[in-house]
Image (cartoon, rainbow, N blue to C red; front, side, top):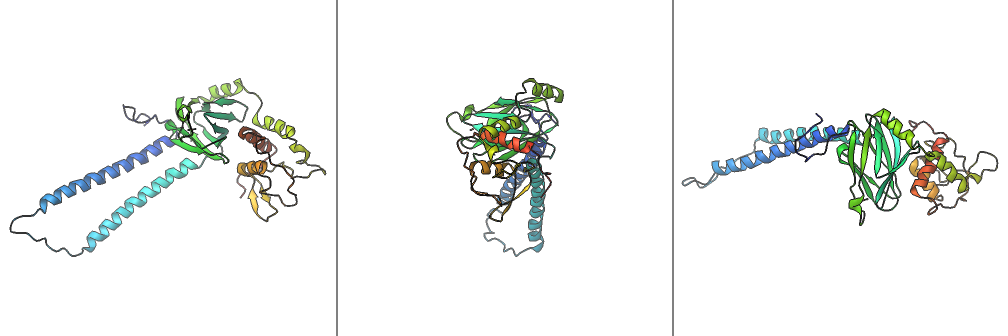
Length: 316
Ligand code: CUA
């Protein structure tokens, strides 16, 4: 069921999440509608049936009925639990990107969406993705809160300054779909729109190869050298800071005794607020790079660090 209604109240269903979300929505609508009609009908029926009549001015006293009370407690409980399990199921599906998802980066800024493919392609207010393949977008913002919203995919995820959030989807129908910013972000919020182009895998590969410039990891390496990170982060005896090879995904033991996992948020924090998490055995000598690197630059650096080898993602 890929076509819904003949009139355009609903956006097309173009992702694996879309039918799941819609079925749940229709079920909730049907249940609420049914209950509203039932209650309205009963109010009407009772007010007629038990209306005041001459010669019978007093109501009959009704004592409790266990059967009735158990009935109206257990039936809603079962209905609500059913709803809860269904909702939780859709929720976990929507927020758990498959491990084999194609990764890319998205940065929101006043007032545009910038996307970065790991092969090097960069785009603004356009996002090309292959059909029938899970895609994970790691989102952040350069300034204020934005929200990545693709109605046809039923995907909406805030892009927050200073943090990374994830949105994932698997497109099911090739085509071009609306991309919106769904969080008021200033004067041109309404102009912060674009399109997601879902392509057949072969066409997508061709498109990717078309404009391949330097990859984020390569740009990250250039940045790493131009910011002179490599004078301290090195593998030899002159190293005054941790070697970054194989760091991503690994556990990091801090001076404070805490143990962290080296994920994107950790790397970003270490670049901008190096004093926060001092690694065991090292001194707090690293300066902050706040204001010196853009959000995209940080993503490039993260890609470079990932390219130095990553620990297995499954590691606890
Ligand atoms: Cu960005 Cu609204």
